[in-house]
Image 1 (cartoon, rainbow, N blue to C red):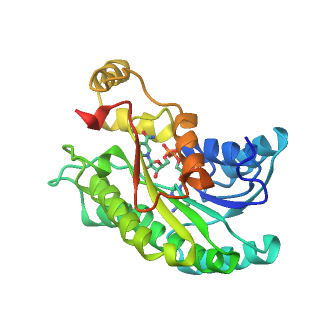
Image 2 (cartoon, rainbow, N blue to C red):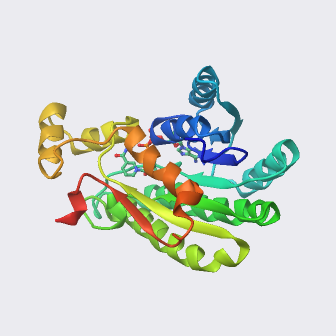
Length: 255
Ligand SMILES: NC(=O)c1ccc[n+]([C@@H]2O[C@H](COP(=O)([O-])OP(=O)(O)OC[C@H]3O[C@@H](n4cnc5c(N)ncnc54)[C@H](O)[C@@H]3O)[C@@H](O)[C@H]2O)c1
């Protein structure tokens, strides 16, 4: 499929997991990819993978919590590419913490990356998308943005916020030709997925099995499973979708 030929796509957190798979997938469909991350080695590796598969891409350092960083990045993309069609707000942090244990600094750090980062991304990317004649923004929420779990007061809080920010922006921006949708993965095999198991503690294999038992499909997603959904929302195949949520969780939140 070449659904994204001629489009420029910006992916935050492109140096690992779902972000890397998304860069590879969008590039394979013809997009010129701009991967950003704070993990420069991971970002460079992603771009090497994109290029070795015949795609086009570049890496830039961006801490998504930096407003000045976002402004400079969007200026760079405008200067280098002249347009922006797709933003995937994927960079994220996971912390498990019960109310009594989680301190305010940790709570704020989660919100800085997972919520403020998404706000800044939508704000500055939309400016260049408007000049480009429209675009598609995909925000990574989570199953944890749909239902709560013990120890999730911070993380679930951030992902619930992303869900509703998506709906608000998703009804505000279509007048500029911009659609905004959220993706809600369940358990995904990435470094963050592994950290979910670590955070619970105990034997990792047993923990994984226990978590998997609650998933009707009885398996974890690959990053590519999530990238498939992101590519659909990024493309014109979803032209009538905005403010919508795509749940890719093996049925975990359907029961
Ligand atoms: N893995 C899962 O099970 C799962 C489930 C649901 C939702 N998600 C969401 O999907 C997204 C991607 O998760 P993943 O599993 O690929 O995680 P990951 O940890 O493998 O990758 C996240 C990337 O974000 C980057 N990042 C973190 N803070 C950043 C910052 N301030 N600025 C720029 N980049 C930053 C990291 O360096 C890393 O490369 C996240 O938003 C996550 O919350 C993941």
